[in-house]
Each structure stands twice: as structure tokens, then as C-alpha cells.
Image (cartoon, rainbow, N blue to C red; front, side, top):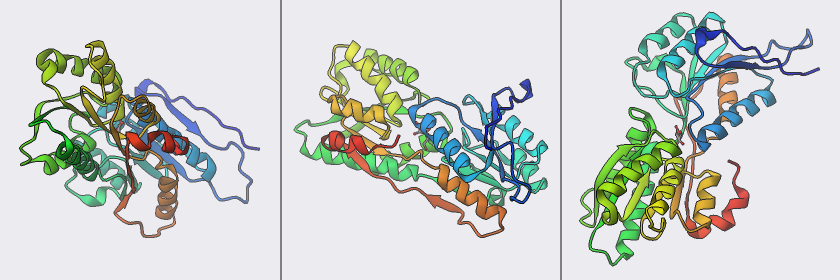
Amino acid sequence: MNFTRRTILGAALAACVTTIGTMATPAFAQKPLVIGFSQVGAESEWRTANTASIKDAAKKAGVTLKFADAQQRQENQVKAIRSFIAQRVDIIAFSPVVESGWDTVLREAKAARIPVILTDRSVNVSDPSLYVTLIGSDFVEEGRKAGRWLADYAKKSPAATLNIVELQGTVGSAPAIDRKAGFEEIIKGNPKLKVIRTQTGDFTRAKGKEVMEAFLKAQGKNINVLYAHNDDMAIGAIQAIEEAGLKPGKDIIIISIDGVKGAFEAMIAGKLNVTVECSPLLGPQLMEAAAAVKAGKPVPKRIVVNEGVFPAEVAAKEFPNRKY
Ligand code: GZL
């Protein structure tokens, strides 16, 4: 009989850890794989869908998942990884909130002979053997896709110049660094396109709204385009634009990334112009990779998720197909 047991570990984790798995396993069955997963937090629609995908895939795969929410703080992820090492899990997996500062704790996992799988975001480490594989999107390409859409829009626009404000993701995170780089690679040298303000909105709606309010106060009618590194910040900015008496999607063209349901609803309402897909549905690939690692099978160092671009014109037709 399967029923889930929730074990809340002590304050030592400074985060809520829940264990989802089967209580009773027939004696002849394999011992279920135990994965310790440290999640960034619950900062966006994308993250919520990513967490659901991982928990659902664990259940379907009969994996015992020890899940820790770091509330977007690296120190909580380090604590969670140390706790997983102490619990002798089979595999440690995590989505690193920022790229740097992981060498020490990943060396501890290596010394404990516990393989590490990265999902979603990458790390900068001196020794690439500190993790087995990274499963996730190509954020630089997502930034290029956003830049290409805007360059195409600019070609058709009668405006002499298009002033851009940029809402960056979490400072130091792989998606923020790479989405900025990819976008700049495409627009650099284009005389029509100029970034006049750029600042982090930390991937949240609240911060995205707050920073857009500041942009509007400083640059007001000068802003022609918003490039947001995720849909949640774009949705927050849409509220700020409307409160300033302007029409999002018309007075200010808005480009964002993720492809969450909220973005499709905003496009159908004519308030967002395009979203670049970044799939959070990494759960099945994580379980597959973990099982392969446990079985000693080879796993590619990089497992890339392929994604599309969804302009407002296709939003209504595509919306029923969306899974997150
Ligand atoms: C991207 C992921 C980012 C999303 C945001 O893979 O790391 O973090 O784009 C989320 O919505 O907060």
C-alpha cells in the first residue's frame, strides 16, 4: 500500500524539507532510489511548475524524494546539501540559485561518494567532475531569441530609435547572466535599439513591478520596449505600466521568457507581445538521469531542453496545449 509520509526535519535546515515516498515496499522489491533535492525557492510560476514536475516524476518513478525549499538563499541550499550527505542519500540534485560558491560543499559530496545532478541552472566550479550532468535550457539562446524577435520588430517599426529597459533575473544566477548576454549579442550594433536602463527584479512579480515603477518615474514616455528575463517580472511590470496610464503591449512593447500560463493570458489580453519558452518540466529527465547514474550507466554532461517562441498572434491557439 502506498501512502506518503511527510517528515519535517529540524530548524537545522532553516528550510522546510519534506520526504515524499512509499512507506511499505515489498521485501523482494529493489530499495527505492533516494534523491535529496534542493530547490531555489517558490519565486515564480515557472518555479512552482518545476517543483510540481519533479515531485510528480519522483512519485511516478517510485523514488523517495527529500525536498528542501531554499527560499532563494544559497546558504539554505548548502545546508540542505550537507543534510543530504549526512542522510547518505543515493543522489543529490539541485537548481543552484547562483553560479558561484559551490566548490566546497560539492567537494564534500564527492568525498562522500554521492553523485550530484544539476537541474535548470549551472554552476561555476574549478573541477567539472563535481557534478555528473546539467539538465536544463540554453539561457544564452533564450536571450538571442528575445533579441531576434525585437530586431525583427524594429525593422518593421517606423520609429528612429527604440529605447529599451531591462528587468534582469536574480543577480549572479545563470539565467540572468546568460539571458542578458544572448540578448546583447543580437542587438549590439543595431542603431535603432538602445538599452537605457537595466536592473534586477529578482524574477518576482513584486520586484518587477517596483523596478518598473522606478524606470517609469525616471524615463516615463521615453521607454519603448521592456525586456524581462522572466514572465513574472513582466506581469508585475504590466501592472506598473497600467497604473502609470500607459498601455502595455502597445505604448511599451514587452518581451519576456518562460512561457507560463500567466504570460499567455497577458498576450491574449493584448498586454504582452511575445514570450520565449523555457520549460520547467524537467522532472522525468531528472529521474531518468538519476536512475542511470545509480546503475553506473554513462550520462551526457549536458542535457539540453528544446523550446519555442510564442508571439501574441499564436497565444489563443496555443493556450489549451500549455502544460505549465
Ligand atoms: C530558468 C529558471 C528561472 C525562470 C524564472 O530556468 O531558473 O528561474 O526563468 C525562475 O521564472 O524564477
